[in-house]
Image (cartoon, rainbow over all chains, first blue to last red; front, side, top):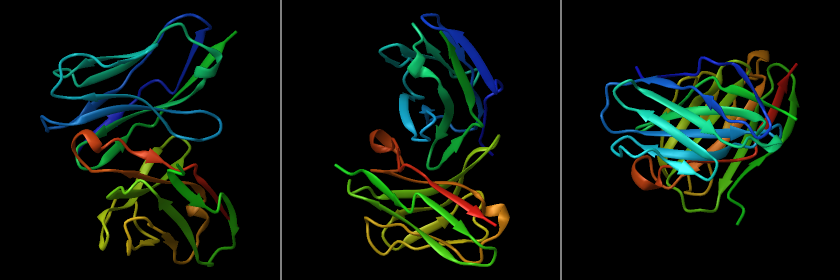
Length: 111
Length: 115
């Protein structure tokens, strides 16, 4: 069965610093998609970044980038120049024909 | 563009009562799904649908029913509410289940408390 593991329940980062959130997954599939979603206190789920497993190039979206290591089944999210508005719960998700979510990492940004 | 709309946003139920959480999307998405979010457990899939007339169970389907009579609507029914169903519920949709269109879009969530 596919699983997604986020081993860091909570992380803290100083404003303007860089932080990396970890995600590992288990699958026997070769084609799949990986996502990071952000959930601020409003509880709205916001797509941060998306990675197709067949693409070797790591996805980037402005200050957000991923380190995708397919052989290691690892998909970490790097947030550069952290801002107060980045404080949220972050969920890693894996998808083939169903989405499977990790348990989330709560990110605190310290002023 | 409304996206995915869920109603109600907040609801308090008594044990044994039934209710329906409504979900509608205006993006002509084929794939719709319901998740529940509980502390420390992330989002768990309840039911999903790949198109009108087609539904299937997710990880935690017990106590819930769904139907998909139109592309736009995907209501979630609680048959006999239990305190264990106290949770935040999210409806989500995507153009497809696979490929470039499989990014899912979420509604704003429905807070349900069963007392």
